Image (cartoon, rainbow, N blue to C red; front, side, top):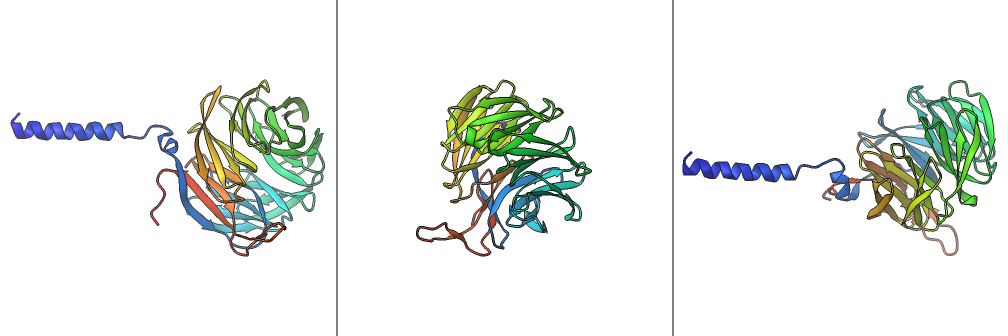
Amino acid sequence: MNKINKTLAAALMAVGILSFTNLPTRGADASAGYNLLKEIPVGGEGGWDYLSVDSANRRLYVSHATKVVVIDLDKEVVVGEISDTPGIHGFAVAPELGRGFSSNGRENKASIVDLKTLKTISKVDTGENPDAILYEPEQQEVYTFNGRGKSATVFDAKSGKVVATIKLSGKPEFAVTDAKAGRVYCNIEDKNEVVAIDIKKHEVVNSWPIAPGEGASGMAIDLAHHRLFLGGDNKMMVMLDSTTGKVITTVPIGEGVDANAFDPGTQLAFSSCGDGTTTIAREETPEKLVVVQTLTTEKRARTMTLDPKTHKIYLASAKFEPTAGQRPKILPDTFKILVYGPGKAPVQ
C-alpha cells in the first residue's frame, strides 16, 4: 500500500471509529435531555384534565371541558372530537374492542364510544364524580374511580353492564393495572396510601402507606420490575414495590404534581407539575431512582401522557388572564398541547 493509500485508509478508519462511537444506544437520546419540539393548537374554551395515548393506533385523547379532543400522533394535528361528555376527567381505550370510555364527572356517568366514528354508543351509571378511568384488558372491564363517591365502579367493556362497586377508604385519584399480577392499583389521595384491587374478586386485597410521600395524585408503573411511581403534593416522587407495598426510594419533584408516566424503553419516570416543571428520573436499578433533568414547561401544565413508541411526552396548557385575588381565567382559543421529546429543539 502506497503512502497516499495508507493516509486515506487511516482517515477512513478514524471516521469509522468516530461514527461508531457516536451511534446512539437504547435510551441514549432520551438521556441527552428533553426539549420542546412542537405546540399543537387546539383552541376552544374551558378547562382540561387527563390526556391518554393509544400508541398502537397513533391517537392522543385530550379531555377538554365537555368533549374529548382527538389528535393524530404522527401528524400532530387535531382530527376529531367526542362530544357530550359533561365534566370529563379521563378517557381510556380498548384497542382490541375498538372502544373508548370517558368519565363524565358532572353527570355521574361513563360514556362508551366507538373509536372509528367517535360516536357515543351508550352511557353507564357510576358513583359520584367519576374521575380517573381505566381499561383492564385481562377481564375486559372498565374501572371508574369516583372521587366524591369514594368508590370504584366496574363494568363490562362490551355490554356496559355494571359488575361491581368497590368501596374505598377515601378519595381515589389515578390508577394503573398489572394484568399478569391480576391487580389494579389506585392512589387514595386523602389517606396517603395505595390500594391493590384483585381484578377477579373485585375487592381491595392490600392497602399500603406511601410515607414519606403525601397526597399522591399521579401514578405510573414499571411492569417488568414491579415498581409504582407516585407523584405527591409534598414535592416528592415515591418508587414503591407493587408486590410488597414497600417504599423503595424517593426523589424531589416540583410543586403541584398531577400526572406521572413511565417509559419502559428508556427507564425514565416523569412527574409533571403545576409550577411549570416536569421532573425526569431514571430507574437505574429497581432500587435506585436518580433525577436526570428538571424540564421547564409552562405554568399550570400539570397533566401529561407519554407515547412509548416515540418517547415523547404531551402536556396540556393555555394562556391565562391574571385576576387579583381570584382564580385565573383561561383566555379563549389559547388551549394547546405541548410536545416534548429527546434530542435538540427545532430552530425557530
